[in-house]
Image (cartoon, rainbow, N blue to C red):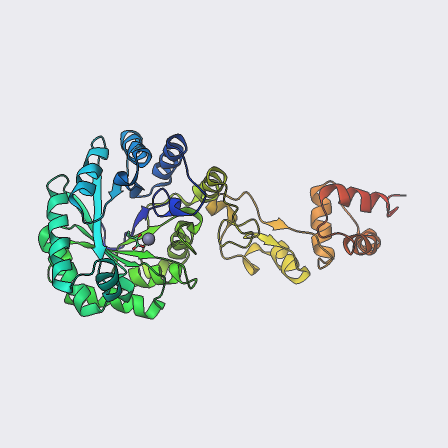
Length: 386
Ligand code: KIV
Ligand code: ZN
């Protein structure tokens, strides 16, 4: 693995599927997993096998069909969880068990009614037990975002000694600022003995809208895996959006960090997940929202028609969108009207355009958006061809 390569760990089918009211059946999960494999994700977290017979069946079915990616199953630090996950992963070409425990004082006190040393012991036992089934064991320190760095470093060191190959540092509650999250990863890189034997992984939630920024700070500071979901779906405000982190790294090549993702599949992937889960994607969603490449104000439209780069930092084709959209509204100018008129077959002279534009404005004031049929009607009723 080159040091610039950031692994993409997709958890759409596990953390993503925790969105209330969006249960997927095994067939739907298998279709999504096949596409994720083609998309080029490195790891597919297929589910939490002990949580239900349905989840077990899905992880098993996905393990059988995935060709390239590692297939991963989540567990708590509980022996039976780990044993069941190992069974569900039996058919995977590359299997990973993702085990862990809460490490913040709040989790230790309220969830486990325990103490710091006892939590480390449970973490170590879980990793060792998982290691008895698979070579690839990822350890998560749940609520690492609110765990103090000294203790977190002790936990990570113990997990590596027990055999963990990946250390997941979740900002479970989406609380950290990018600078804090980046500093946490840097601290672990510099203070955990044996850290060179493991990969640090960012798992950020979006409660404050910072999941993407935090994950990027994480990899800038030495993490080499990002855990994310398509469209950023997940518990509460969701997880880091896969399409966002991948495109941030692609559009900033000087960071010298890349992924194995075929970005031209991003838009289709977004549609597949949104349709299967019945979760509508907000129009202004970065990269894959309906308006991500739509221009509606006159000034922007004029610029984009002259040269796309004036108001677009991404070529829409790079993410699987055929072309940018010039949306005609009452805010549009003559350049946009002429452009769209040409698309539907009218080459207007300057004088004709002036006349049609006046008609267009009175039409557009009564309608949110002007479509191709409206353009025909506006031009034909403007009498410019007589
Ligand atoms: O957010 C989180 O802490 C998690 C872990 C279970 C990995 O999803
Ligand atoms: Zn999570």
